[in-house]
Image (cartoon, rainbow, N blue to C red; front, side, top):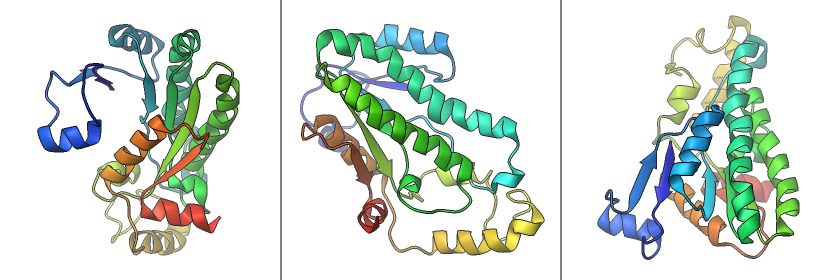
Length: 234
């Protein structure tokens, strides 16, 4: 899905949406599959000129690597890594020719610390961290910026449920990990859900907005108190 903010939308988007809602005259939703080159081309053609590209499409995965089929690994990378790279490439020509624009790649706070049960997911997001840091240097020559936003753990979305295949984490984890990993996985997940700092959706939205408008050269933007804490502990 592509969310196209119409150019005539006045004022700060976040405060406007909170106060007034987001009607069809203010936002436009376009169909987009980031793993399909034809879908990318059609969505960008329909959107017209773009000022900021926010790559937020992603698939979560919680589990142990030994028990993860390579087909699943490739699926994660197709969306989280190659999809981001494909949509980014699709917008760069217009950014370079115009001499302005910003790419915001949403990664994850998993890149900020040592977290078990996330080997494949973290690898897909670390790849985008490296991609963005090098890309930013290439694009600066033309007045174009690239940055990453690193959201923390948000329990009020369906992301975690999808990442665990809707597994009840208080029960058996046989759908999630091989049986010989279950004691380790239970301990790790217990520490995960018992943490005292979490991220809200608004934390991420506001951090994306700040990153889009940042001109200081800052590359990485942790989003949410738990992500900020991890970043400061590095």
